[in-house]
Image 1 (cartoon, rainbow, N blue to C red):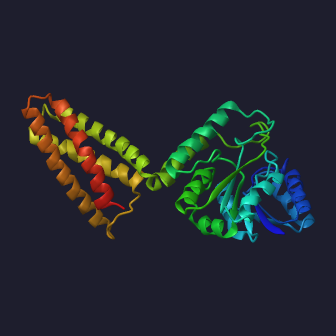
Image 2 (image 1 turned 90 degrees about the vertical axis):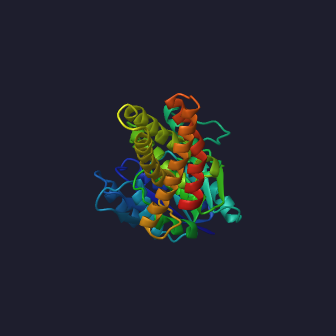
Image 3 (image 1 turned 180 degrees about the vertical axis):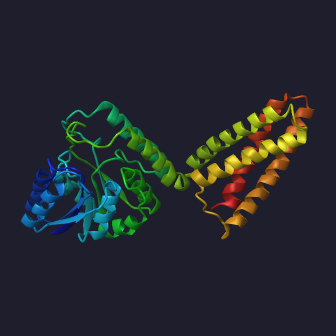
Length: 359
């Protein structure tokens, strides 16, 4: 028999928690040993009392609680570290998902071909309830955006149903930083980084409305975009690194051109170039360490990283001056000459940062 631990984050779910547990109990009829860990996230309603009553009625139920509301991600982290089953999954405390689907999710793990299995709402070949259009669009966009950085072909990154081998999730859980719904892109990025074998299974889904208690909103969507960039950008495949660096360099170039255009009428030519490049370099450095390289320096000391970075900037600065001067002397318009010079320096910038300054 398989030992399955399900982590059930709970916040103000007094209307559905008991029904959820009863539905999960049906898995016992399929030779599954259950451990149900309800993590009450400081509910304001009667959810915690209901959870304690369920703990008394069912030996499979274990209740943990947070003294302050921290969010779904924090509740899952608490539950993951307390799980004892061979396999550990996620179950919301509502009735949107059907726990029987865990029988399908378990198969790739039992067969030894997967480390993690996602339950996808969009691999559904059968009759299904129609989902909210804009909610679906947002989920699919976030999944697509996440896949660009993780290089995984997942169809439903935001799904609740994620099932892990215990050793995998308990290795990853201490690394979690997101306390709310940012858990989904964060865990997906960690799964990709750790080269986990990921499978997907089609699952059923019966969405509830916001009036019925649905909690995720558009602000969580914006947070998910941030999390995809924050946890995935510096691990992204080379094509995404180059694309991100192109965006960063475009912003730096814009800073450079605007500064140059403003100062060219007030300062000497050489000083104008140096000041414009210095501001662009600062913009470039800050965006690089925030998005792409995350301070993963090749150098042990931070100040050495900065000195090496400044040296690389100095080389690019010299190239920029030479290129810009050359094109202006050839009769090219100042702004166009500057733009061409920036384009030529792009490759040098990226190569210096990727192979000299950062890992």
